[in-house]
Image (cartoon, rainbow, N blue to C red; front, top):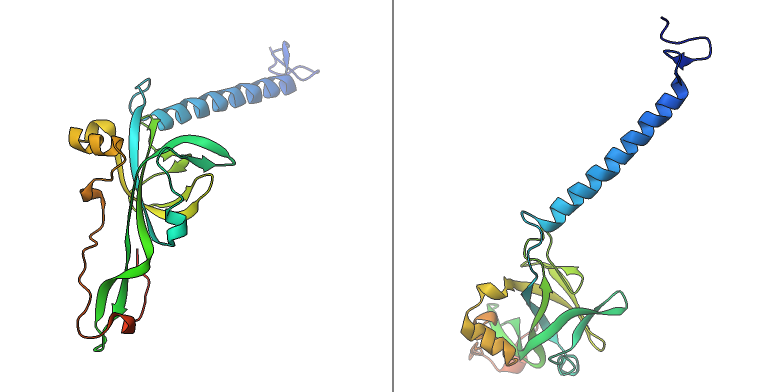
Length: 210
């Protein structure tokens, strides 16, 4: 029996072109199924169906003008893509901004700016702890990662300093956050003595490298 007959049919039953089309369709279906399965694994991590937990993200915004820092309010939600997100501000702390200057000998000294503010903001949102990529306010969050801090009335660049889930926090820390207070261990040192070699107005300003 011939494999192909005069009409180009395989074993006299199916056209070889039709067979090729069927195989292509099967391959495409298999690729779609594999992609969806792979995406589910990468999204959910090691386990699926785990309940969402509050993820607390500490953001550091340095050298903000007072008008901006005063506009940040507890309870505000972060904004992304023109809409509110579920990420909510739970605690805010404002300190005089640290900056580096130079004394009369050329030595770098750390001081505090008389006007600008360093603002630490803690936001939280319920997300899956098993996700490979953690997102709060529809932005990826990793320690040291840049973050666009944006509410209805404020927008500023920030840096992620801490990413923690609620079960990782002590009862005292949770209590402080629930009362709108940023725990001291979340803050950068701010009690820096001013140089005594020269008047403060002679210190040259320089931005603190983040």
